[in-house]
Image (tube, rainbow over all chains, first blue to last red; front, side, top):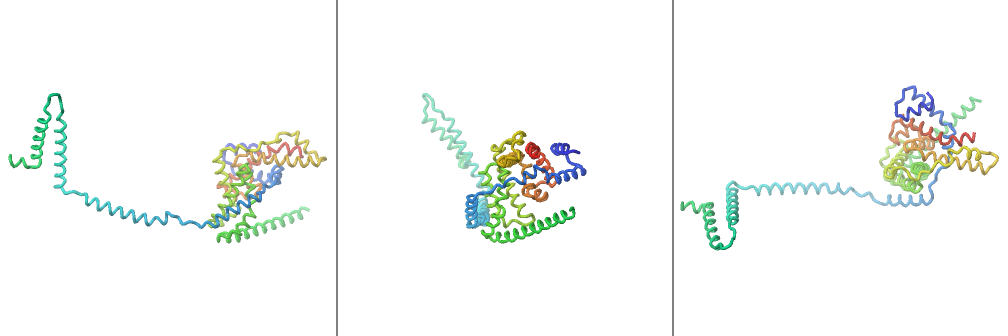
Length: 159
Length: 213
């Protein structure tokens, strides 16, 4: 196998057989004395300037004098845990307070129903031409009061 | 003759091994001091590696300005994180890993590099032949400069993946394993990328090399 064939095989990304790997090693060993490699090795080294080194020294001095700051999130961790615990306790107690008895719930529902009813009645009172609004309102309120009485139980006694 | 050369070669290898060992010991001592926030020790460490790191970054990003920023960031991050350096990989590998990651980040942010140097004169064998005339010293110098430009141009034409492996292996002289660790790729991929990168480099410099031969 020639160098060119090996090059093509490597460029195409094919894997090499053991014999080809040995050949690659041999070519690499042989290449150490190649004039192109010799020219590369004898190329001038790029030197950093003194100004570059002075700037680096300044940066290193700044890094050396900067004390390593402790990781703040590590310090905050216990405080955060305590706060989370307290918040949990608060939520639990609040949920306990908010829990309502069946009686209170029934009363609240009845009040809601009454309010909806009042609103519905009020919504039916539409002003129009020649309508006695005061009379309608008086009637409506009477009906409303009666409904309230039924809901709250006063009217039940009379019935 | 052959035996003498072999002895010389093996002596050189032993010297190199000793030097590498000494380097590792020195790095280890410096790292220990740096872990205690010793700024002077870190300064010595920067002295040892700044040229290599800067040179690598400079060739990886193309722009001198960006290279200066990234190379500084490499050392700042190394200083900040030296406590995490576990010594499993060498300091060289660790530093070049940081440098490679920063270069990749920069490349992703900026997309393709607009300021890449063109392959000036690479495909011009005539100019290469003229410049390679050894009778003219200024021209020989010019050839060297042109060759260097061509090398830089060829490097900049490579993809980031091929370029990083080529620079780490052939300039920084890192082993396949070290490169694999620094770039987080398998050793086999390191080898295939190096082979392809060298192929591109040879192609780009062919005119110069043939003219110079």
